[in-house]
Length: 246
Image 1: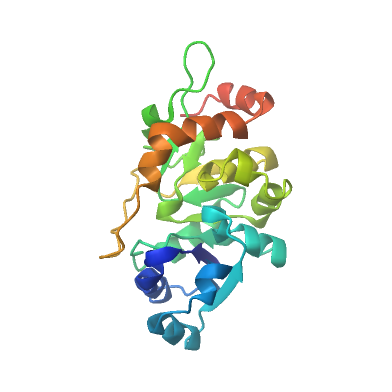
Image 2 (image 1 turned 90 degrees about the horizontal axis):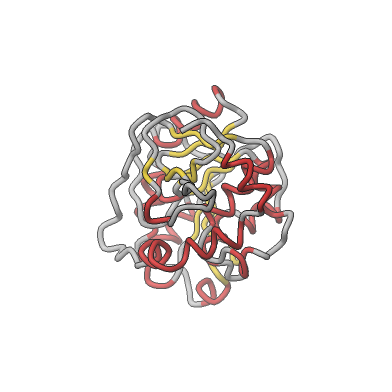
């Protein structure tokens, strides 16, 4: 099952990301696009309507920001045996994108799996280092400090989403733009180890004309450090500090 969300002007170009997923070597059992009710009420572009006739599901939900890509699904449908793969709306995914994620899931069922991510760092005094200093992972070994980056696509066993949803919509106050952080904490607390697909992080090409917003820049400059502080408990951080993997 693949789930993604879009919003505003990006809804006009999300069809390209969806097409790239649908044309992959393995097609998802379900492919769901989540739109905030206001965006859905504004009307679905013709190209998305065409994709609906070919199997795309488009559902409306409350505006949970980036958390729309998993939260409505995990709270509306429960299928513990089926992992959920999240995708972004402005990326062209390669032919074996989903096939490779599923292969790794079969090898490592107790891992969350993605194509790229940053490794959380700690300073000498034990505090979390500024987010901008976290480096990209350069190993496919499991690492509980690895925060998988949703832009590349991430596979989550359903138990991780279950844990993420235990706290309702608290993410709107504590981590509104940091779905990657919220889901990393859920993996940590549910006993799943993040893992990168390859030793080298993969950067998928962007959808032409998608006009990727400055969300990532905002998070790096003044958002993610505060979200980290609000998201992780001292118990979480103590476990992460004690990790010897890197």
